[in-house]
Amino acid sequence: MDPQLVLVQGLNGVQLGVMLFLMAAGLTLVFGIMNLVNLAHGSLYMVGAYLAAAFQEWTGSFLLAVLLALPATALVGIVAEVLVLRALYRRDHMDQVLATFGMILFFNEIVRIVWGKTSRYMALPAALEGQVEILRGVGYPTYRLAIIAVGIAVAVFLYVLISHTRVGMLIRAGASNRTMVGALGVNIALLYTLVFGLGAALAGLAGLMAGPTLAIESGMGDPILILTFVVIVIGGIGSVRGAFVAALVVGLADTMGRALLPSLLRTLVGPQAANQAGPALASMLIYVLMAAVLAFRPEGLFPARTG
Amino acid sequence: MGARLRTGGIAAALVFLALVPAGAHLLDAPFYLKLVGRIMIWAMAALSLNLILGYGGMVSLGHAAFLGVGVYAVGILGAHGAHSGFIQWPVAVLASALAAAAIGAVSLRTSGVYFIMITLAFAQMLYFLGVSLKVYGGDDGMTLSARSQFGGLVDLDHPAALYYLIFALFVAFHYLGHRLVNSRFGLVLQGIRSNERRMRALGFPTFRYKLLAFVLSGVACGIAGVLLVNFTKYVSPAFMHWTRSGEIMVMVILGGMGSVVGPALGAALFLLLEEALSGYTASWPVIFGPVLILLVLFARGGIAGLLPAPRGAPRG
Image 1 (cartoon, rainbow over the protein chains, first blue to last red):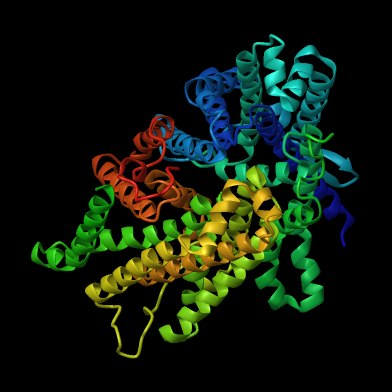
Image 2 (cartoon, one colour):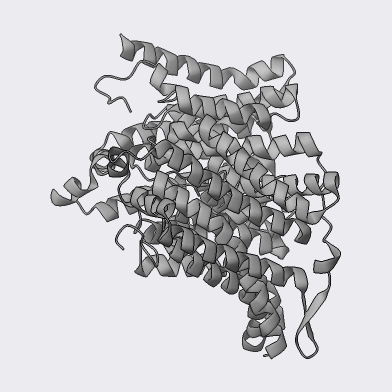
């Protein structure tokens, strides 16, 4: 196997992993604390990408677009929380699935109405456009390295926020016993809204970082939402640490599987069968991984409620 | 009184459904024949989901996978020249039973939100399998070369014959569903939904009951898939996309869970609403989405919750 290929694909896997982590952290917090299944989390990712593209067109600056799109996405999330989701916390999961499914339909269509049916693209600032030589003769896009750096920075920020601040303490307390936290005089409704806004901002961050690497279009949040579910199921719902580990595992497994599985199969079963089965197996790999994890650990790798 | 009203309503619905082909012929509007046929097929898929969702308390968000298994079983056999329904249909039943047994055996180890997500993930896995099957159309899907053939017994290319086959299975599904949920098996299943630990303490092997319900539900949905592919003459991974699973679930909840006729009412409401709104504006989801949210927030229990309940039935 070509070591350069493995290195480049490994970095691609880490990049997908940190994107998934940004999505999973918000989703797993919202679930762990508010007991809410939010299918519309992928819509916030999409809204983040669209808003960033719109702000970039307006201001002409990538940095300004990022700085404006983040709070704007958080605001969209907070409005959705206050208008709809707040009423769902005490409902069963099925009502939550149904209502947030309705939100997906709404968001996917509203972006078509506001920004048109055709895909939009974002330009990169010149500083992030080129390649960096990571090994002699092996280039890697600067922007992708920047995504990895931002993702790791956010992970550190979340660790500090959750483990070493008062808000984080309340978040952890809320996850283990909501009623008790409320009884101790904490404004639990405000805490929920804040956490939801944080999750929305993280999803928006993932979306706007993905913006320049792919077409921004209606429904772009749906595929990553499913991958995020796989991540938080493997990681253990409610656990940010689990989400981080699982996001990297899923990101690496998916990327490496797609890159290496077809060539691996070619040596095992011959080119024709490999061309048929390779892509199919590669796209199914992470789901097989999830089934395997759940077969041994039905609560995921880091079950939040027991420790 | 309520029970009589209910029986009357069901009899009226059956007469109406039986007369649709004649009416469509008289009005020269084959569109209505197709619309009602489509509603009945999705109603069967919704009914199958309701068995595990409404009666078993298993919130599966990946039910369209079994629809897809039925669709692809017919499509793949057809692509290799096996057009006989006597081969296609049993293979489809067997394939959906195997898929449901495998998916159920892993998924049912979990519960609650894990179950929702793992069923969703398995459905996506089959969706991507369909996308990667380039020989059978891949992402774009492929046209079915011929509908299932039953050696001259029924000619599915005749719209009315296809309609009555769908109608017959639709009625049979509801009759069997009614018998099943009121049988000992159905009562055990509802007991598990209410309190699984107590049922286990009473000595019921709850995992086996749930798995059997999951497999029955998967097979029923696979048969709906067989009808769907014969109806549309088209094989596509889009039938397995997770939004399809979401739509089936919406139908069940709209109609009212834990009621035999609920899913059919929900399917009819969903598809008619979609039809009406899409005739009014191309951006119909922007209205339909908020309508869904309002229904969840303010109309609990679905349509069936508004109807008179059968004697002794618990209100969900």
